[in-house]
Length: 307
Image (cartoon, rainbow, N blue to C red; front, side, top):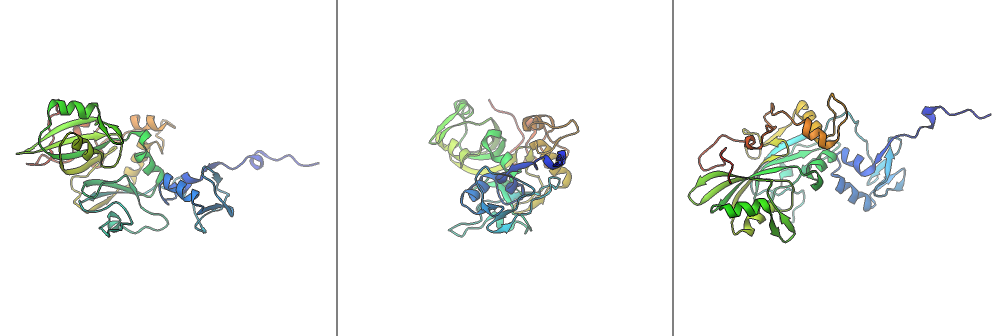
C-alpha cells in the first residue's frame, strides 16, 4: 500500500512573479524586467519564460543564459543619494555622448544601480539610486502618488489667478496636471523662487506647467522625493549612501517591511510608519517644514505659504 505523503511533501513551494524576483535581484525595474521577459531573454528550467509567470526557489532562472542567484528576503537593498548637477543625463546610453550620472556611481557586483525616477538634463538636485527594482517601482509608479518637491526659479511673478490655475489644473498636450501645493519663496528683481509639490513624474512636467502660463523656468532643483530630502551638506556631484537604519526606515515607509505591530498595507505603512525626521535625510511630517536649506539671499527660502 502506498504511503500517505506528509504535509511538507505535498505542499507546493511558494511562488512569486518572475519579473518581481528579477527586480528584487537588482537587474532593473519591474517594467524593464517585463520587457526583458517579452524579448525572450529569460528562461525558467530551460524553457522561455512568459510575462506574468510565477517561479519558486526550486526553479532555475537564466537571463541571457546566465543563472540568476536570487537574494535572501532579509538582505537589505542599497540606496544612494546623489546631488545631480545640471548638464548630466540620467541614462547609461546617450547618442550625443553627454556626461551621465552613472559615470559617478561606485561599481557594484551582482546587481546594478537603478535610477529612482529621472531629472532632465538641465535640472539639478536630489536623485536616488537603489539595487531594488521593487523599491524603485514603489517610488515611481503613478498609482502610489509619491510626492516630488522642487525649488523653481522663474522670470516674473505669479498672480493669484496663476496660483488658482496651477493648483486647480493646467491643460497640457498629454492631459491635465496640477500642483499638490505651491509656496512662494521670495527672490530678487524679476527672478522669483517657488516651491512646488507634484504627485506624479511625467516628463518635464514642472517646466511645461509654467510654460503653459507664459513663464520661463530658469532653474529647477528637486529638493525632496517622498520622505527623503536633499541633505544640506551634500555638494553637487557628491554621493551619500543610506545607512542600515535609514534603509530599514525607508522600507517600512514603502510597505516592504513591517513594524512591531505586524503586517500592514503599503498605504498604512506610509501613514503610520513615516520616518521621524531624526535622520538628516528624512523630512519632518509637516509639508511647510520640508525645505532643505537655511535662507540665503536670492535662493529658495523657508517662507510663507502663498495664497
